[in-house]
Image (cartoon, rainbow, N blue to C red):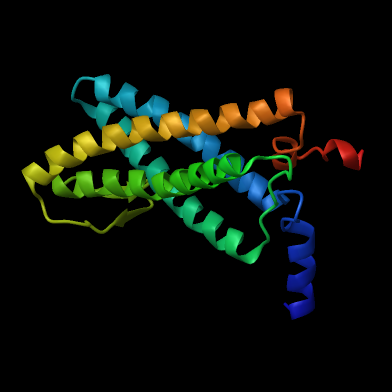
Length: 196
Protein backbone atom coordinates (compact mmCIF):
# COMPACT_ATOMS: atom_id res chain seq x y z
CA UNK A 1 0.00 0.00 0.00
CA UNK A 2 1.40 3.40 -0.98
CA UNK A 3 1.87 6.43 1.25
CA UNK A 4 -0.87 8.17 -0.74
CA UNK A 5 -3.32 5.33 0.05
CA UNK A 6 -2.48 5.54 3.77
CA UNK A 7 -3.02 9.29 3.69
CA UNK A 8 -6.39 8.84 1.94
CA UNK A 9 -7.50 6.25 4.53
CA UNK A 10 -6.43 8.64 7.30
CA UNK A 11 -8.47 11.44 5.75
CA UNK A 12 -11.58 9.27 5.41
CA UNK A 13 -11.35 7.40 8.73
CA UNK A 14 -9.43 9.83 10.92
CA UNK A 15 -10.53 12.59 13.24
CA UNK A 16 -10.78 16.24 12.29
CA UNK A 17 -10.37 19.33 14.46
CA UNK A 18 -14.15 19.36 15.03
CA UNK A 19 -15.22 15.71 14.88
CA UNK A 20 -14.21 12.17 15.89
CA UNK A 21 -13.74 9.90 12.86
CA UNK A 22 -15.32 6.47 12.27
CA UNK A 23 -12.39 4.54 13.79
CA UNK A 24 -12.43 6.60 17.00
CA UNK A 25 -16.22 6.32 17.20
CA UNK A 26 -16.14 2.55 16.74
CA UNK A 27 -13.40 2.06 19.35
CA UNK A 28 -15.21 4.35 21.79
CA UNK A 29 -18.61 2.65 21.57
CA UNK A 30 -17.22 -0.90 21.56
CA UNK A 31 -15.27 -0.11 24.74
CA UNK A 32 -18.38 1.49 26.29
CA UNK A 33 -20.40 -1.68 25.58
CA UNK A 34 -17.64 -3.93 26.95
CA UNK A 35 -17.17 -1.86 30.12
CA UNK A 36 -20.93 -1.98 30.81
CA UNK A 37 -20.82 -5.75 30.22
CA UNK A 38 -17.93 -6.06 32.69
CA UNK A 39 -19.64 -3.98 35.36
CA UNK A 40 -22.59 -6.38 35.16
CA UNK A 41 -20.68 -9.63 34.60
CA UNK A 42 -18.17 -9.15 37.45
CA UNK A 43 -20.70 -8.90 40.30
CA UNK A 44 -22.84 -11.66 38.76
CA UNK A 45 -19.86 -14.01 38.65
CA UNK A 46 -18.80 -13.09 42.19
CA UNK A 47 -22.29 -13.90 43.50
CA UNK A 48 -22.37 -17.40 41.99
CA UNK A 49 -21.48 -20.45 44.09
CA UNK A 50 -18.19 -22.14 43.22
CA UNK A 51 -18.70 -24.43 40.25
CA UNK A 52 -18.36 -24.73 36.48
CA UNK A 53 -20.87 -21.95 35.76
CA UNK A 54 -18.94 -19.49 37.94
CA UNK A 55 -15.59 -20.49 36.40
CA UNK A 56 -16.98 -20.11 32.88
CA UNK A 57 -18.38 -16.65 33.69
CA UNK A 58 -15.09 -15.57 35.29
CA UNK A 59 -13.19 -16.82 32.22
CA UNK A 60 -15.50 -14.71 30.03
CA UNK A 61 -14.98 -11.73 32.35
CA UNK A 62 -11.19 -12.10 32.04
CA UNK A 63 -11.36 -12.43 28.24
CA UNK A 64 -13.45 -9.29 27.92
CA UNK A 65 -11.04 -7.49 30.26
CA UNK A 66 -8.09 -8.44 28.04
CA UNK A 67 -10.11 -7.26 25.02
CA UNK A 68 -10.64 -3.88 26.69
CA UNK A 69 -6.91 -3.67 27.41
CA UNK A 70 -6.06 -4.39 23.75
CA UNK A 71 -8.62 -1.86 22.53
CA UNK A 72 -7.24 0.75 24.94
CA UNK A 73 -3.80 0.26 23.36
CA UNK A 74 -5.36 0.65 19.88
CA UNK A 75 -7.23 3.78 20.99
CA UNK A 76 -4.03 5.41 22.24
CA UNK A 77 -2.16 4.51 19.06
CA UNK A 78 -4.97 5.85 16.88
CA UNK A 79 -5.21 8.98 19.00
CA UNK A 80 -1.49 9.58 18.45
CA UNK A 81 -1.93 9.22 14.67
CA UNK A 82 -5.10 11.25 14.26
CA UNK A 83 -5.86 14.79 15.51
CA UNK A 84 -8.01 15.23 18.60
CA UNK A 85 -11.13 17.38 18.11
CA UNK A 86 -10.94 20.64 19.99
CA UNK A 87 -13.20 21.40 22.92
CA UNK A 88 -15.80 24.12 22.35
CA UNK A 89 -14.40 27.62 22.73
CA UNK A 90 -17.28 28.42 25.10
CA UNK A 91 -15.89 26.15 27.85
CA UNK A 92 -14.34 27.85 30.87
CA UNK A 93 -10.69 27.00 31.69
CA UNK A 94 -11.70 24.88 34.71
CA UNK A 95 -14.13 22.90 32.49
CA UNK A 96 -11.33 22.24 30.01
CA UNK A 97 -9.05 21.01 32.82
CA UNK A 98 -11.83 18.80 34.18
CA UNK A 99 -12.48 17.33 30.71
CA UNK A 100 -8.77 16.56 30.24
CA UNK A 101 -8.50 15.02 33.73
CA UNK A 102 -11.60 12.87 33.16
CA UNK A 103 -10.28 11.58 29.82
CA UNK A 104 -6.87 10.84 31.35
CA UNK A 105 -8.53 8.99 34.26
CA UNK A 106 -10.66 6.93 31.87
CA UNK A 107 -7.66 5.91 29.79
CA UNK A 108 -5.64 5.07 32.90
CA UNK A 109 -8.47 2.94 34.30
CA UNK A 110 -8.91 1.10 30.98
CA UNK A 111 -5.30 -0.06 31.42
CA UNK A 112 -5.06 -0.46 35.19
CA UNK A 113 -8.32 -2.35 35.78
CA UNK A 114 -7.65 -5.23 33.33
CA UNK A 115 -4.03 -5.43 34.50
CA UNK A 116 -5.16 -5.62 38.13
CA UNK A 117 -7.47 -8.51 37.24
CA UNK A 118 -4.67 -10.26 35.37
CA UNK A 119 -2.29 -9.81 38.33
CA UNK A 120 -5.02 -11.05 40.68
CA UNK A 121 -5.48 -14.24 38.63
CA UNK A 122 -1.73 -14.81 38.37
CA UNK A 123 -1.30 -14.34 42.13
CA UNK A 124 -3.96 -17.01 42.71
CA UNK A 125 -2.33 -19.29 40.09
CA UNK A 126 -5.42 -19.09 37.85
CA UNK A 127 -4.73 -19.07 34.13
CA UNK A 128 -5.83 -16.12 32.00
CA UNK A 129 -6.76 -16.98 28.44
CA UNK A 130 -8.38 -14.97 25.66
CA UNK A 131 -11.67 -16.74 24.90
CA UNK A 132 -9.82 -20.07 25.10
CA UNK A 133 -7.82 -19.27 21.95
CA UNK A 134 -4.51 -18.69 23.72
CA UNK A 135 -3.24 -18.46 27.27
CA UNK A 136 -1.52 -15.34 28.54
CA UNK A 137 1.63 -15.56 30.69
CA UNK A 138 1.41 -15.05 34.43
CA UNK A 139 2.38 -11.52 35.46
CA UNK A 140 3.43 -12.52 38.99
CA UNK A 141 4.20 -15.65 40.95
CA UNK A 142 1.47 -17.12 43.17
CA UNK A 143 1.12 -15.03 46.33
CA UNK A 144 -1.89 -15.23 48.65
CA UNK A 145 -1.36 -11.79 50.20
CA UNK A 146 -0.93 -10.12 46.81
CA UNK A 147 -4.05 -11.92 45.58
CA UNK A 148 -6.12 -10.65 48.53
CA UNK A 149 -4.81 -7.11 48.01
CA UNK A 150 -5.58 -7.23 44.27
CA UNK A 151 -9.13 -8.49 44.91
CA UNK A 152 -9.81 -5.34 46.95
CA UNK A 153 -7.94 -3.10 44.51
CA UNK A 154 -9.83 -4.55 41.52
CA UNK A 155 -13.18 -3.95 43.21
CA UNK A 156 -12.30 -0.37 44.17
CA UNK A 157 -10.99 0.36 40.66
CA UNK A 158 -14.20 -1.03 39.15
CA UNK A 159 -16.24 1.36 41.30
CA UNK A 160 -13.96 4.26 40.35
CA UNK A 161 -14.31 3.42 36.66
CA UNK A 162 -18.09 3.25 37.01
CA UNK A 163 -18.19 6.65 38.72
CA UNK A 164 -15.81 8.36 36.28
CA UNK A 165 -17.63 6.85 33.27
CA UNK A 166 -20.98 8.03 34.69
CA UNK A 167 -19.58 11.56 35.15
CA UNK A 168 -18.27 11.46 31.57
CA UNK A 169 -21.70 10.39 30.28
CA UNK A 170 -23.49 13.07 32.34
CA UNK A 171 -21.10 15.72 30.99
CA UNK A 172 -21.85 14.60 27.42
CA UNK A 173 -25.60 14.82 28.12
CA UNK A 174 -25.11 18.28 29.67
CA UNK A 175 -23.36 19.41 26.49
CA UNK A 176 -26.17 18.01 24.36
CA UNK A 177 -29.27 19.09 26.27
CA UNK A 178 -28.18 22.16 28.28
CA UNK A 179 -25.23 23.72 26.44
CA UNK A 180 -26.65 22.53 23.08
CA UNK A 181 -23.23 22.13 21.45
CA UNK A 182 -21.85 19.29 19.30
CA UNK A 183 -19.67 17.51 21.88
CA UNK A 184 -21.92 14.43 21.97
CA UNK A 185 -22.92 14.57 18.30
CA UNK A 186 -19.32 14.49 17.12
CA UNK A 187 -18.93 11.03 18.70
CA UNK A 188 -22.05 9.78 16.85
CA UNK A 189 -22.25 8.65 13.20
CA UNK A 190 -24.74 11.44 12.38
CA UNK A 191 -23.14 14.73 11.28
CA UNK A 192 -23.15 17.69 13.68
CA UNK A 193 -25.98 20.22 13.42
CA UNK A 194 -24.04 22.86 11.54
CA UNK A 195 -23.08 20.27 8.85
CA UNK A 196 -26.73 19.51 8.01
